[in-house]
Image (cartoon, rainbow, N blue to C red; front, top):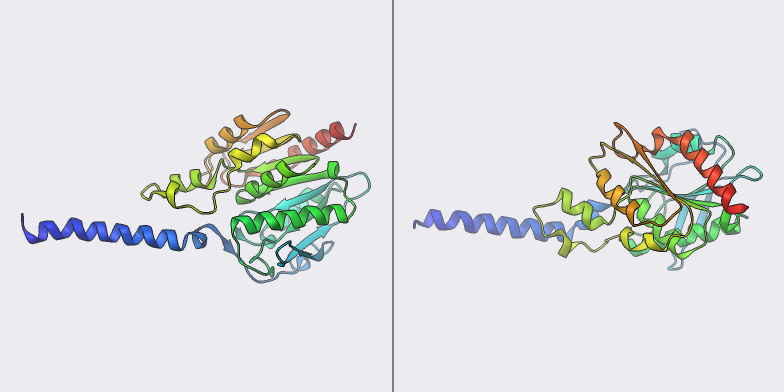
Length: 271
């Protein structure tokens, strides 16, 4: 065997080891993509939203957008996905609140003017601060809609597993970040390397509130099969909206149906 024949596989192995090390070291940069700049809601067409400051249990200061609910309407406690900031959800927020629902949307640590850096345990602390603020604003526990999109579905699920809430709505959810990473980074031993795992499959069994999952059947970020698997693990009452032809973050195509479901489910819970 020639020297070149021996050297080539050794170089490939070395490059692979370097790639694995880099992916492990910088994995949170591959998971979180914040817009760190603070954006005023009025600049994106939400002049009715107030900007609040929330304090977490570990001392971070978070930005949150709040739109008050009209009498008798629920408050949507909203957890975004991993990219950008609340400003990217402005059209969604406008549609979700047009019938009088309130909104409390939390910017995670490291996002949109909030202090700190994002990580799994930190985001769960951020969610706890959001829940406490919702109650302090006067929302009854049974009148809180916990809503999470993409990465935020994992945040929403763990919060709802720990607290009394009215209903839970998930847009494009997953079983775990490990399962998502294994699809996109199949060449790496992701199941051994991932630190922020967001095990929604372990949390969903503790949900006692009515559950709605919305997922696009052409989602190439979080394939619908992961949403379906998560749904199968959930107890009743539950409903799954499959949005034909939609990609990632399909709830935007089904907001009227989602609002009708929320109104019906919240009414059932209040009776």
